Image 1 (cartoon, helix red, strand yellow):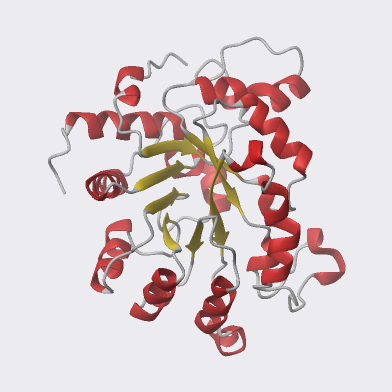
Image 2: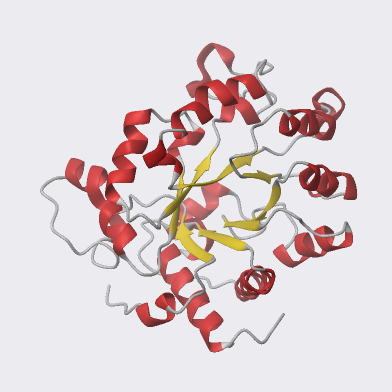
Amino acid sequence: MDYSFDTNAAKNLPDTIRTGTSSWIYPGWKGIIYKEKYSSEKDFKENCLREYASHPLFRTVEIDRTFYNPPTAELLKQYASLVPDTFKWVSKVWERITIPEYPEHARYGKHAGKKNEHFLDSELFKNEVLSVYREPECMKHTGPFIFQFPYIASAQKKAVNFLPRLQDFLSALPKDFQYAIEIRNPEFLSDEYFHILNAHSATHCFNHWNFMPPLHTQMQKAAAAGGLSAPFYVTRILTPRGMTYAQAVKRFSPYTSVQEPIEEMRQDVLRLMKRADKKSYTAYVLINNRAEGNSPMTLDQIVRQYIRSNETTY
């Protein structure tokens, strides 16, 4: 597909605005982002991060595979060898830390449908996840960790006891990393929730997802609680509101073009970027293909709007 990115607009973003996508290995981006010749699909998967990270639009990327298993030190070193010194990645945290109960799904094997004994296990997180990021070459590229919590049904809430356990968990974590909490229950957007985040220098991950309220509502909730004090913002633009992940995959794959722009979402992302710049916070903006159909194009159009606005709308 013929599409021209505004690389000058991307280059003119403030240094603190880090834009990127949810993962990067998409054959549908060939000819759009990926223009080099790769000898095989294996070569493409192992090395296309280098071409991705050389594009002016991308200053960060979400590592999605770390949701399923912790990375090895060798994998992170490989990633580090492919990106420039200024590039930061954002890592999704191993789901064994974030799901209170294993879903009824074949990939969970004997654990399917059972209570997760390692939910919010700080020692497991420190030993199995954080430890592999401490090598200096990896540390310099390490941005926030995203804890993606699933929607917790009403029948589970009492047993899960989410907010008190989140507070205990965050209090046990080392302070030399950054943490972003992504919740899928709108009712958790309370003063208590934001106070817990601020007490432990964590931030809320503003997420555009099926059942969550719009980003501006999440921002208003944070502001009403006194704001977020951690000097970084994270937003993940996942799916259209009211659309499941499976529906979005069916609607938008193979992710070769923007099909359904979400103007409200774009304006909210702009607002978050401008707030970050005004406060000298770092903003990590991560767009998923399942939001509009092609995350690089969505991101490019948001960046163009940001530059055109001349940082006047707050």
